[in-house]
Image 1 (tube, rainbow, N blue to C red):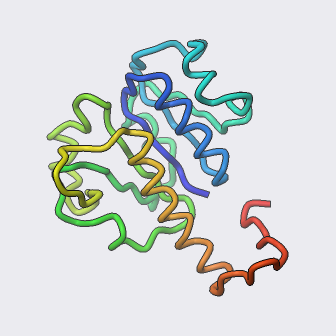
Image 2 (image 1 turned 180 degrees about the vertical axis):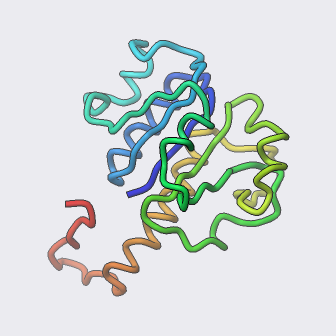
Length: 168
């Protein structure tokens, strides 16, 4: 459904939790090297529980390598605390790539400057940033919510059969 990109992630439990989020929404997880951990790290697998092996996982040497393997019309959104455009101001589409930076440094200034029209933020007060897994969950589930509304515009009645999943 969507594509989550983690550029040089450093903390295995964050990546494990994000893998579970991707699985829960039918999204793919793209990891950009270097990683701050091994994909065999027990903390990564513990956070991903027994779902980790089911995650649609892609490993890339660089962000340009990932981008060169996608169609030219692919949309990328770069999440940063340095943008003034809120994530909820975007109409997300199936297939969009949501790009998140390292836990300690975020995305590079150069990357953000080159893509300033596609930078988004999570507005917040009183703190400089959120945990990476929390930030991914907020934005991914907004994109997922928008997509669900496009498929089934009305909320189901309490006690009604669950809505059909858009990916299967």
